[in-house]
Image (cartoon, rainbow, N blue to C red; front, side, top):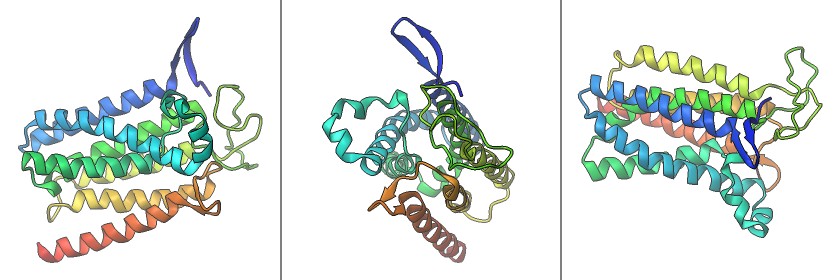
Amino acid sequence: MYPILVRLGHFELRSYGVTVAIAFLAGAYLAGREAKRRGINPELVNQFIFYVLLAGLIGARLYYVAFYDLGGFLRRPFEILAIWKGGLALHGGLIAGLLTGIWFCRKNRIPFWQFADTLAPAIILGQAIGRLACFLNGDAYGRPTNLPWAITFTDPNSMAPLGIPLHPTQVYELGLDLVLFFILWSMRTRTSYTGQLFLTYASGYAMIRLIVENFRGDQLLIAGAVSAAQILSVIILIGSVSALYFLRRKA
């Protein structure tokens, strides 16, 4: 697609970085608005965004490095820092974000589930916009296919294989993420207990990744055979559904 938006001499403005920045800004705005509605100080959301941005980027990059080509990155350690070229694994960012959220809520004495419910719609909206970044960059590309809606990347700066019709997995996930966003947005005033919205997000996104991962051509594999994202998605799905059950009984 369009990995590089502007090139001036040695300076490059990459679509990946610009779109990810838009995703964070959109998520921050929506989370602040929802916090105000729920009676939470929006300034706490702004503080959390700073921490989660840093932790999420580190977690997403380290996850990618660990499962993509750890040996290659260790031989070229400076490339670990080149996140503007792509190579951020969403699950790594989500794990780091969750741990940061637990720490932040304990530090500021905020009920974790209440804060998580506040952020849930913003998180999935940010993820949807983030998949647009992957589409523009050729990241998170699909397997070869002859389907009429296949996408062929031709820009030599794309991360996807060139000249081969591929499943538009970025678009698949973007669409499913938006469906989940609208479900959460409609639920946010009608939940029965605290934690329901966030756990619905967690279980919903786990199912999305289980589906989309079947069409991915750049899977991060464990032992070269099993999709790391699908294993983690199964764990998240089981954990979130179990937590939904126990929180409902507790309520």
